[in-house]
Length: 94
Image 1 (cartoon, rainbow, N blue to C red):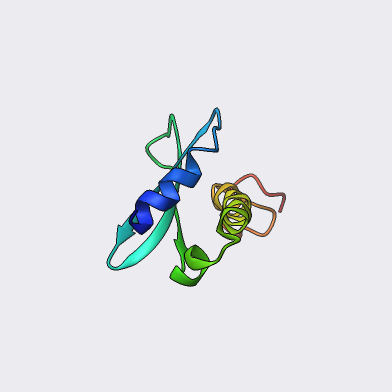
Image 2: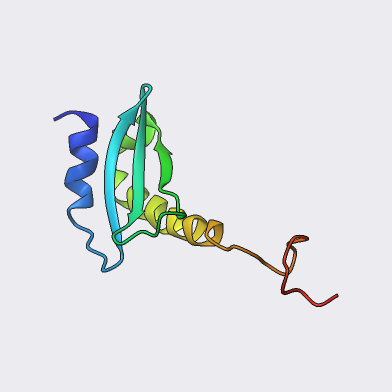
């Protein structure tokens, strides 16, 4: 089983109502792909590199779960259009 197929096999254990999970090899790198199922055009897809050493580890299923949960946090935080720290926030009090 190749690396992408192994990751995809683990990802079959996850089902989410809003998100799709997949894996790909891009430019020699393995990546976890997190994407919204009904994504608006201005929302990006999240890519997270999976190192071969993580895939080779016997604890890979747990490592992948941690990567998914950490990636979800980062992905949703990156979706903020504005935060209180945004200097270009038109709704921020002056």
